[in-house]
Length: 178
Ligand code: HEC
Image (cartoon, rainbow, N blue to C red; front, side):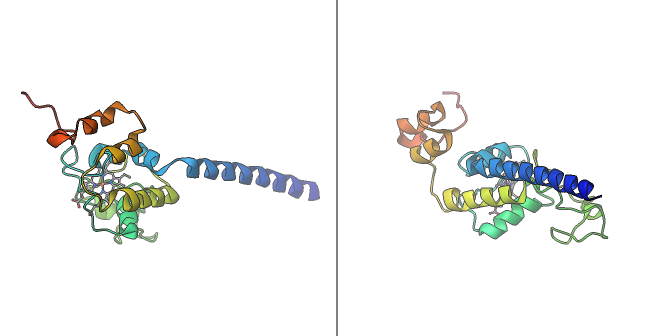
């Protein structure tokens, strides 16, 4: 009996250490990497300026007035009835027997509202990291410039060439016919 308990404790210790390793790897993923992996880029663009695309017009995160907690809630819960998906797996419980996490809603309530699921789910600490990134690097910034672009794509990236040419075409724009 004693040996059995000892074995159990050892197995538990192993599980714990694996958990710790994973947590360390997750925090090692940079916030811009999470922003890319969750495809915030796909709708809000790398610079957060938003604009048209699938799912309707994604609001500008550069012009957002939300604070960090409100951004966390938006990413966690999404916005039912808009193109903003939710990114926390357990945001909406199956029924009202479980405590609601978002807007007091559970799955049956959402039937009449469109709500997209993020292409990947994020963990709470990843949501916090990405919200922090939006607040510190995107919110309140003016038009994106070469320094912003280089910070996102890395030094020498061809994606940032357009900013080096300067002038009024400095923002990457869809190709025109002329
Ligand atoms: C499929 C497209 C799509 C993806 C992917 C997406 N968003 Fe959004 N997002 C939207 C749309 C559309 C809105 C506008 C919702 C509305 O009309 O209220 C929005 C709104 C927001 C807002 C609210 C802005 C404000 O001022 O009210 C925040 C913050 C936000 N998104 C952050 C993110 C982050 C961070 C990610 C990645 C984890 C992300 N979004 C991924 C489409 C998307």
